[in-house]
Length: 271
Image (cartoon, rainbow, N blue to C red):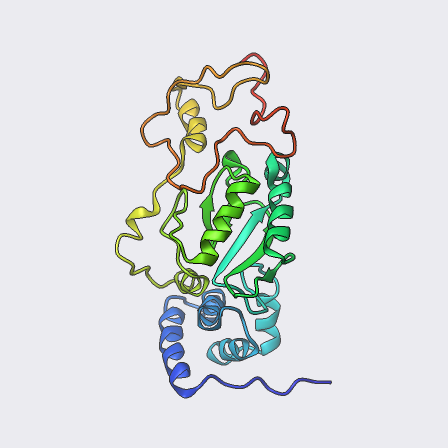
């Protein structure tokens, strides 16, 4: 049966969202270009893109609800069902999977009692397997509300979600301090993160990411990233700034899918 028209937001919510939407639309020469940030905006209101949110975007941009729906269902960052305060995404793409991402995802499903894209009964955690996080040099990687937690194991990942559900402090490896999914959506819409120190804490790339840049510049690396299998590590002591900042990170020597050989990516021949 055809659905009835989506209900509107309450008057006060509508007025607040309209003011925010007009600010976003004014940034673009073509109002249609503001659709992606507007979808983040309505997601920040209810935690997912509702039919009411789709109607709101369509009316603000003079689009049809079909056009808005087509975009909101194409991008995976827009949720179409209610989600938890923390979206825990486990990378199951090739490198993370080989390094243990598949094992992490399977154990989290069992530990939380949920499947892919499902939310725990307390509404705290939504578990999702996701494609490449663009952090292959820290595999396996878990993201919480798009903040990085590097070099994970099933044990550290389970401790991470337990801490999230219990309300204990959780600090990402890199990036700004953690906030709720709705707060993250508002930041992604294009509004400033006004939390004290959040912007300054965003940091930069880690040493595993930067070693290629140093080699491209002709600099000599101070240490190998990993040791060849079967040999003791000859790496130099960690350089300043190379330590992981999160208490939820695992030691880098992990590979749940190959526990007898826990080395990282193979080195080039002759190294």
